[in-house]
Length: 317
Image (cartoon, rainbow, N blue to C red):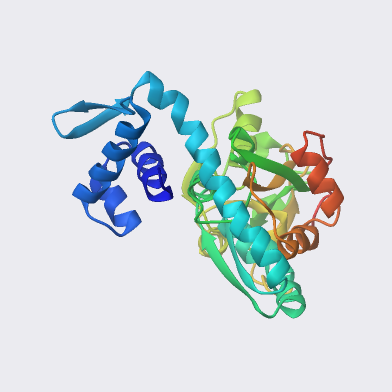
């Protein structure tokens, strides 16, 4: 039994039994992947996969039991490497972060700047994607830390820590009728105008949809995007009212727009920071986590890993 065999089985299950994809990922040939899987099956004395001809179609019952075990073995093997690295070269290494556009653009820059000053010999890699893509990158080992508002807490294989709370706001061009409304804007008033906001699954969009649904209102969403800068661009063109994360608006930078509070319209959102359950966190990873969310000290992270509930930090800007 060797780690290459274990990786072949794990990636075959993750890829939907596509051995061509597995071969590309492991930098080998498809026959090589098939051989590694068959050799492990021969050693275990059971079939891990059901086959239709040469194709793998699903896990067998023994395969369903074996897969979580071999996944833990691979995680622990990686942990062993990190233990050695942590003691032999404490401030040298690589940290891969996966985040949504909003987090990468607005929340992470000061954290990355400060981290680089503290750990100049740590190479940072920043991936961007949807919350589901971020979870997939964490589970595959492509990323060490994931940051997003939605979805991360839905995966039992991840430790998803509450980091900070934030609200939405409305953005409109100067002279927009909503600016003349007395008092806070209501959902009924907002529903009269075309709306530009985030795609489903991004940056608190679920709370926006839920708010309108509770009032039995049908919002006229004319454009959706994953990027707040894109939303603001089309608001500037007069195409609609933008609903964005409050952190994505800066009065000095966004001088062609006007902001209206929407904290009373939609539920408060919670950004989470996640990493694979069972992963060994190097010292500089703890430092990055605490820099992003000061309440997530090393002791707090360790308590969360042990199953203790952690409260989110105060609301961000």
